[in-house]
Length: 100
Image (cartoon, rainbow, N blue to C red; front, side, top):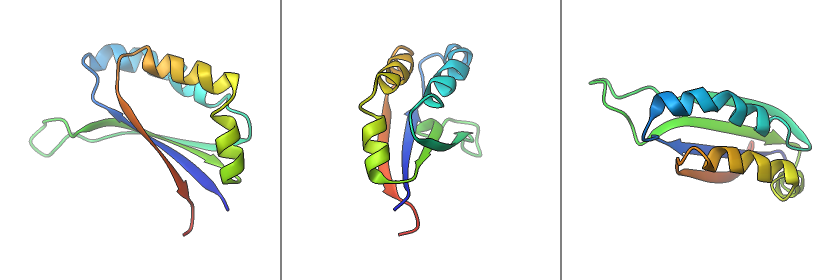
């Protein structure tokens, strides 16, 4: 059962500073063990130009729920989450069964 971890990243207080830090955040995510694929996206603003409740999404794909669960308990995950939390942004994480 393939598993995807989706991180929904809220709007940062300073979007420019967050975007400056983002390449290292994504690079840290790519170091997670057993990671098969990464899909990163920046959320479009509303049609009137105001922000939506989310700024970015980051999808991390694994072969199984067990691989995903093990990956988030590693030192690499600690470093990744430390980079993300260091920006001061809030986020929500979801584990999803792909194809169900």
